[in-house]
Length: 71
Image (cartoon, rainbow, N blue to C red; front, side, top):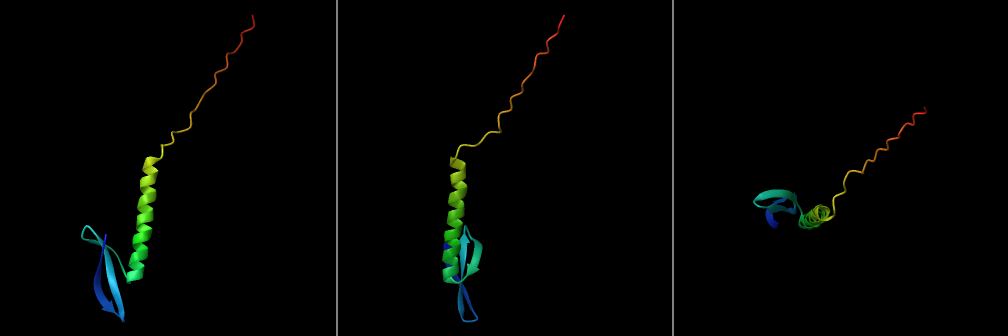
């Protein structure tokens, strides 16, 4: 992710966070830094989910009762 200067609006310098040429976020320098931190945390959590073993559906056991026939 790259941070690049976009413009000055209302006395504030605005920057854009870009990834692969696509703007993901636009804001002040501190806001862009915060966005990058939050995005990295989300991506790390998403990847960590891939490393955890997948939980299978609960095992269903059915019990069959044998009926006794009295003769």
